[in-house]
Length: 347
Ligand code: NAP
Ligand code: 3JM
Image (cartoon, rainbow, N blue to C red; front, side, top):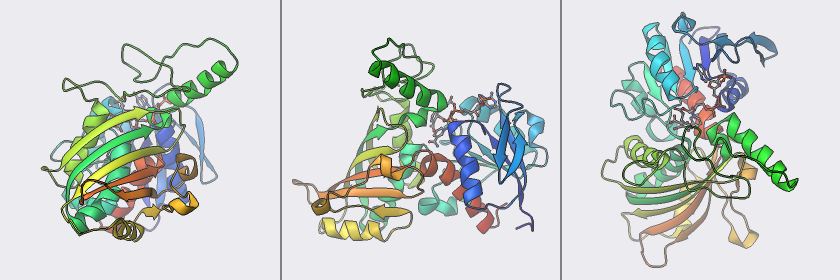
């Protein structure tokens, strides 16, 4: 590691994820010698404080990456497609938070608790998985390792902050309008660029990202394909239903798994997850203890509770998994990847 640290760029620094990237870099005391904050021209010139110093946000261009060693991208897939190769060409390692490169076989897709070693095969770009995938695989990996894993069925209850700052504003303004008895017009959710928009306040929308020809949404396909890639289990059965809720931050997931071992108790699963890295077990029905998004905001861990054995299948278990989608789901996982790169001497 260099004495003073690395030249780090944050692309999308003014966004919901970018802001949490900066908070996380600060909290983790990541070694930074120079910080470059990039956005679209809309936010260029904006001042941002980091470690008591004021920085001016600049428009992202290929030349913005001259001298940059680590570039954290979260400005949408099209920006990553255009600028991540430019950053790599100039010597940077890119940690990309979009879906642009996740399924590229030359790009490691990494959750450090699961497959940190995959970083060793990087070719300049490392992909950060989808928020819903990340929190799920953190809980699945100890089960796979200990008992073998054959099937995963997940339904998500996702917060609006996963759809960016504009979606957070939409939930707040719409809620206020409804409480005031005023009219409103949905413009962002479920998907900014799609044909129709629906009310999110006091509602539940069973669509996240666009529909695919197979009837699943792209968010659901991200969970399915990314889980298989991260866990290196192309044969794993995975199905997902992704739902947006009027929660500001914190994704929840109801997950059903089937393991290979037929002689495992719910107590054993609880004990295993309690001892696993990055997981906090919150599971005590006698005390009404279980994870909820409001309690997980601002925390890096993945919270697991409601663990119980299926009533019909000896190898089936149900659980409830919650995490801050902007932290472990995005910013913390990216910074954790950067920390792993430093630790493994890959940067
Ligand atoms: P957001 O709040 O809407 O912020 C978008 C950011 O991207 C802003 O900083 C924006 O800058 C910047 N940007 C937009 N167009 C740009 C351009 N042409 N060139 C440079 N910067 C540009 O969205 P967000 O929630 O932070 O998410 C950003 C992206 O991160 C998403 O699109 C998604 O791909 C990814 N993401 C990943 C996860 C995950 O699961 N890992 C979760 C959420 C998001 P301005 O201020 O100038 O508009
Ligand atoms: C989360 O405009 C875009 O390309 C962003 C769409 C998006 C993504 C994505 O596909 O990269 C919004 C929110 C994600 C994600 O993490 O998959």
